Image (cartoon, rainbow, N blue to C red; front, side, top):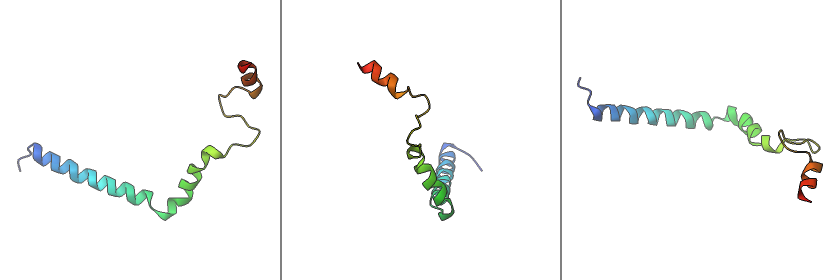
Length: 66
């Protein structure tokens, strides 16, 4: 069998399609739904009095504005 550039292109296309379909099946799997929901809510999970990591205290922010 002679492997020219078009054979490799066809192989890569079929491989890419297989990977895409596998990723879609993994993403849309109902067993993963709770993990994805939890990850989607991570930006909103901070406690009310807690400052984000790396943020300046609120008093320091106010003094810089004045």
